[in-house]
Image 1 (cartoon, rainbow, N blue to C red):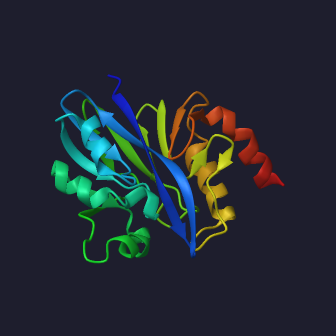
Image 2 (cartoon, helix red, strand yellow):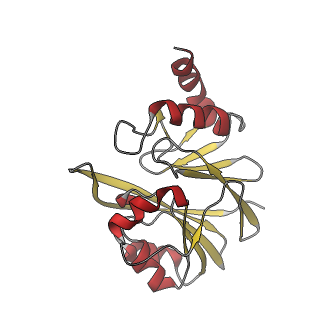
Length: 207
């Protein structure tokens, strides 16, 4: 059974290492007409609540702890009554934004999240941040890549807690084994596919 996937785009500021950047973020809602999981919660919780449209929210999944992916998570959780999950390796990033409100549970590599007749599997892909994670459906048809993989290559590195070599290995070892036709829903910008990105990743690793 194919899951219903809705996208919400919000705009705001990404802040890191003393610099601010204007960004548009993709928020993904995965489920059916009754229940949903929200992937990332950026900038403004109200349009996300509108997209939920009264459905039961099972979880708010933070693909990583950068402020532009978590700064609406707490008000969103309060509005829809859902728990927040984040990989523990990004706790230090979460605490910059939410010093008095811990997440409700950890994301764990290989963890399965069942929603609306489909199952999402957590794939730990460090590099953009230590706790960066992606989610894929069990059939490998769809990947929610956060900031690990974009149309055009890996997510940004060169900032605190990031590593180009680590993200390349994460993508090569954890994501490229997915089918070439796997649709990649990214944290920013347009969709891509695993096949469209594979050659560039392999070339950079071989170089």
